[in-house]
Amino acid sequence: MKTNQESDLLEESPPQQNGVTQTSPAHYSSITPSAPEEEPISTYFEEKIPVPEDVTQVFSFRKLWAFTGPGFLMSIAYLDPGNIESDLQSGAKAGFKLLWVLLGATIIGLLLQRLAARLGVVTGMHLAEVCNRQYPTVPRIILWLMVELAIIGSDMQEVIGCAIAFNLLSVGRIPLWAGVLITIIDTFVFLFLDKYGLRKLEAFFGFLITIMALSFGYEYVRVAPDQGEVLKGMFVPYCEGCGPVQLEQAVGIVGAVIMPHNIYLHSALVKSRQVDRANKKEVKEANKYYFIESSIALFVSFLINVFVVAVFAEAFYDKTNMEVNQQCNETGSPHTDLFPLNNETLQVDIYKGGVVLGCFFGPAALYIWAVGILAAGQSSTMTGTYSGQFVMEGFLNLRWSRFARVLLTRSIAIFPTLLVAIFQDVQHLTGMNDFLNVLQSMQLPFALIPILTFTSLTSIMNDFANGLVWKIGGGVTILLVCAINMYFVVVYVTALNSVLLYVLSALLSIAYLCFVGYLVWHCLIALGVSCLDVGGRIQVGQARHIDIYLLNNMDGDCLEEN
Image (tube, rainbow, N blue to C red; front, side, top):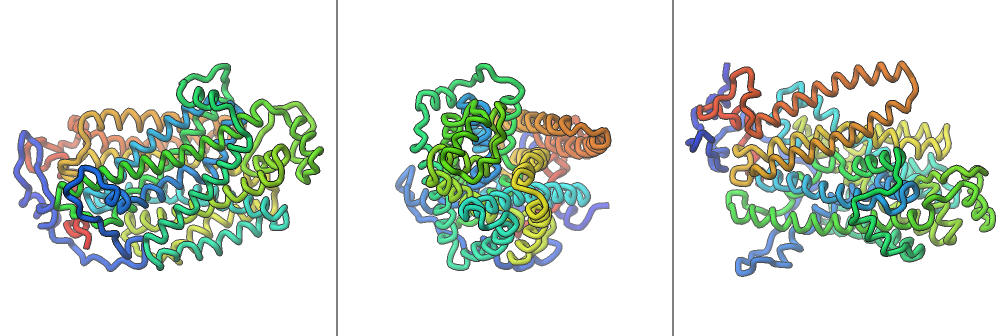
């Protein structure tokens, strides 16, 4: 039995051409929402940035400046403590040989962020809101839980990074558990900066990115890596003499760079500019400038990541614990006991990374490293909270204040981290990053599959829907990224050496693959593989076209932001 809204949709179906339903924003706006839209409460969109009118130029720096902001906030996820740790481990384990993997992962990330930005600009809704309207209740709730899990995992990494930075800066006077608690307070403080204006908030994030660039750039200049080796590692896709360790590290790079909640975040951030979505020219222009801005932002983040990889590749590749222990002894470092007296290859993390920099290049290198880690943790923890806000509002249509949202996510993220910080040492705290990277890798399909699905639907994207090249290319890219990350998960699970955990992992894998299969089924239908509609609910050329099949409750009000 059809609902009144669905009946209206079918009765008012627009004309078709060559079996494809032709839709427009005007058609969407004719649908009456079933319930009045709630007034949003204090979020990132309290104001919208006006875009200057300049019709005489093909490219305008004034317009680019007006659109600058969302891409840099998005790029912070490429610079969180988890990424920094992946970078330094890449340099220490493989030297410069995996820089091309970092470059490739960043380019793939840019293409996926392009899809996210286009969805937000064209529809006026972010990915979580579109998922809320396309998927039935049970899949929608599962999808929300998976994305929340990814956000919490990212939150924990950021809290760990901040706690370690405070510990290093205070020369151990601030214990790890105290650093965890401090992170709660400063997050609340910084999150209310947008009360002073959206542009000031974006400027503050830009300031934190600048601190990271200067901090890690200083380390790069101080260590002075071989520039020829840097360029060779970046542009020659080969890893001479690499084994399983380097392969796992390469997979870890992809998993650390491409984060699921960042797709949801970017699709929401682009709504902060004044764009008339009924004007095709303005929408096209917004897509162009957002892509340019995202390219610049990710280029900056890529350079910062290269700084970290190159520093540890030049200074610590193939170094043994014995060599580091001796150097730390000579410089009087209080952290000498971190490095056992053996000839095993040095294993580093963001804590040990700062220590070894201090041992080899002086205390300034250690403190500047800690400042960079603190900036990375603080910036990413704030964007993570915004991601949580948008995801909760979109999936559940639930409007929480930032205070309540931060309190919830901080509590969930901090409780296990605080327990480890109190009852264990820094080794266990940084060791959590491996598990958290695996957790986030498993959540990738729950962002990548929906974004490809909805940006391929003409009923949602109109003339801006993905073309054949983007559909095929996007599908292959997402398949590759998901396969790489699943390999990372398998490697981690097989290293657990527990029959009970193997059985539990197998059961969870069955449920996980079933749900991913469900999303893939929807995606393939959206891409035009109508033969997969085994129920016969999709009949190309008739009123229930495949776009209408997925377009369950697309409100006109949701497509026309005030």
